[in-house]
Amino acid sequence: MTGIGEATEQRGPSRVTVTARSVNHRYLDCAVRLRAPYRLLETELRAVVAAEIRRGRVELKVEIETIPDAPTAELCDETADALQRTARRWRRRGLVASDLSAGELMSAVRGSRPEAGSPAMGAEERALAVRVSQRAVAALVAEREREGQVLEDALRGHLSDLRREVEALAARRREVVDGAPDELERRVRELLEGHEPGGASGTGLAPARLVQEVALLIERGDTAEELERLGGHLDGFETAMAEEGAVGRRLDFLTQEILRELNTVGSKCRDLTMQRAVVEGKVLCEQLREQVQNIE
Image (cartoon, rainbow, N blue to C red):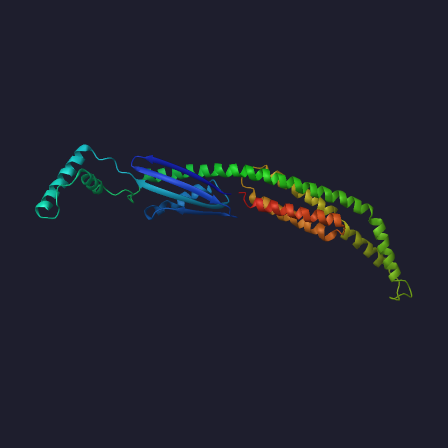
């Protein structure tokens, strides 16, 4: 599922900004972006992501800065006096044309401070990075949950449509079963006529063969078991959607089972109306499957 979460916090001279992004992926794939001095945090921050997210490609971008305290007036004056004396010596030596301006003094004072972003990391800075990462991941999870509600509404719509197709298949099956004796009688008559003594085959149809053919016709044309399993898979799908936690893989498996049963029904039935309902059911099942890929 896609989403983004951000968090920032400054504690003392340390400021941490974390951006967590996620896109769809079959499994959990976490990438932590850290500057080289802080790479030791990567394992700990991966654990922060894994504690809240089970599925998706997640990128955690962590920026850690050290903000030096503002210099005191005494320090500024001392530094400015020292720089001005140096500038006068340089002027006497012909290296500069005049004393330093106020702007040049300020730039020199700022340039004399320790550079921000020191690679040293203490326990407090490490704890701050973990805490801010947890807040960013929590914001990402909240965003994913909002998207999940939209996906749930779409899934329930597709599931309702698929139920109607399965119900239509069951109703049509009953009509086909009611007309099966006539079809069966026709097929048996064809078999008997094709195997009369003295006919093209020259032999009679054995009773065992007749029973076998009748049983095969009935088995091939009856889709009762497949339709019953379809209903059970749809119930299981709806039950899984109502559960807490990561259910995406289970829903993915159920869509595969639903599609398999639809394929079996389509291969068994000869009725055109049922075949059309099967095709429509496959389309709806594919729509379910596409949406399920976005669920954790």
